[in-house]
Image (cartoon, rainbow, N blue to C red; front, side, top):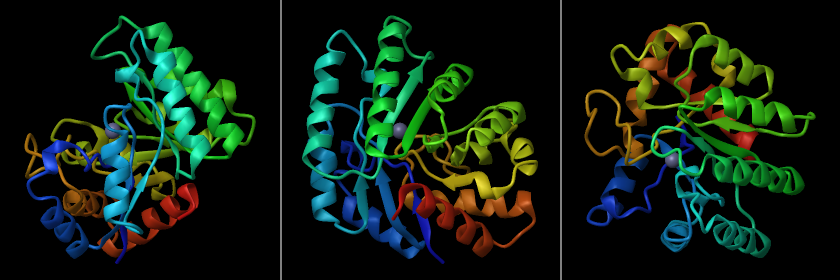
Length: 255
Ligand SMILES: [Zn+2]
């Protein structure tokens, strides 16, 4: 069995005391590859160092997280752009809109999102979208740019079935993680109507740990609880969940 954690911030200090052991636990749970979404220039270095320490296992993305879009966002975009000019990355991410934490820079968030989507189109890279309290707005941005070439994932999808269908119609994937195990999330019911052909797996570690570790630090090995839950919802084996989601993450990210 091969699993891919397509969204994991394991370069953050939350893992400084046990990073090696944590990655071993992931390996023991068949998590063979881990994709690292960028946040901003304060953590790019940590992310790139982790890639150096674990080549062939940890793969970085590049981009500016919507929660890091502030007054200096032009400068931050230039830094991300310089990284992209220098070397290859697996995706532009994470990018998008966050209307949950802070509404001060909504317009700047939109500008940064559009601009980074254009980078992805120019470089033929997938985008990894953060859409907290903004799924409909993010869908509109993708619709605006989708002329058949744009590809990507709505990371940590937790919307309704109508939103899931719109995303799928745009040729995008749903990134499913710990939320599907939460009681009353409703995501289990949404997922029962959605084919796994449109799903890739993620943890969003250190955030959003699945049941039975809800509220604790999340880590890539916990993806097994997401696999178990999806197997139960779809009434198929865990191996089948792994096979189809890994196939599609390879299709999207090209590795
Ligand atoms: Zn993230």
